[in-house]
Length: 202
Image (cartoon, rainbow, N blue to C red):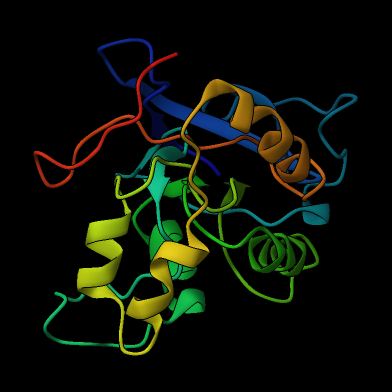
């Protein structure tokens, strides 16, 4: 990418008029425009790589969305719309988001999606996933899921969302969770809506 301005995520000013050389999916070298010389990272024959004109454009690190639900349509509860997960994945990239943290998806489905992205079968950001959130009986996200889920799924929410009442109940559940293809575990300590049961920090 030649003659592009760079925002590096650290400095408050743009680094103007830079050339960025990328090979094997990684940035190999950045330098002032037209100063690249053939070396270990730069092919000696300039025809070996594609040139992209960055004049008037800015390149920056990818953004991270640390709380997403890939299988959500974004529609209000009173207007049921089926989610389009592949569209959602593309939309993140379109918005400059190159990494997402999925916070409530079924681990098997999310792991399959990750594999399809890595294999180039579908387009999407890097995905880090948890499994279903762990909460207390009647705690978030159970009331919200009942509100938004279609019938008959709303009647199964209490069964599908794992709940614990004591610290001792957490250990065997976490052991089962870590057998899945997950990157981390989500435990819910909040009230949504206000006044519902809430998991205590211990």
